Image (cartoon, rainbow, N blue to C red; front, side, top):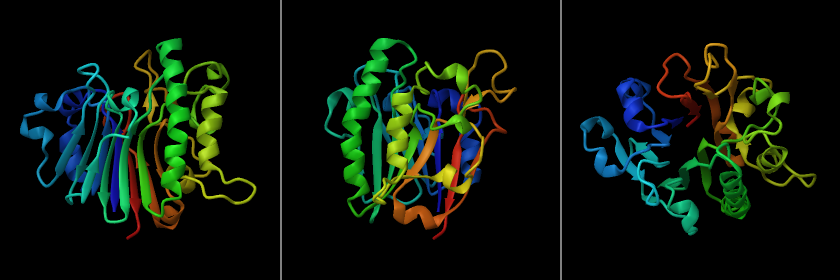
Length: 261
């Protein structure tokens, strides 16, 4: 099983850069996209309905051309969900989930706080509200793969300029503590989410996002903020992963994970 997560920073822009040609070559079972930055009625070109895929979109309703998530699946899901019950989050088009038997694959787009205090405050609200939702999923007995742009790094291994970013959104201690608490078992050995990349690359220093400013990508001055977090039962099924840097479809790189059957 192959699952891809990709922040397109505009699905129409990514399409013009060859993303869908690349995607067809990947033969992925499920592809999760974030920041579609489009309304579904703007995506009537066949390129946005790639052959052999079932396509599902959740658009932002509060601001057109903003945020938005999607899932492309080769097998038709048993069910697709696109709301978690909190309008401020749902209406920005930040969650869609496809269910296949006991497996749920989620495309998440966690807010960025880099534009200022107002959005950083909203990001913290989202984190507080989302934590019990994720805890419930973790203990539900279902297998989950949470794909997406979380806009948070976990450690110094996940960002080139660690010290200089300590006061910047995405690297704030409270943000890192929140994400790491979910990915690290407590003293009692409680279940935790498994960071697929970190499980497969314990000392890896690879990135999935680079600023468009300067020559950040060329110099690999990046951040790892795109994840696949999986429930513990899927840990043993993690086979390999790759960050697709060769092609520049957006300021993020697709993150590909292969799972054992």
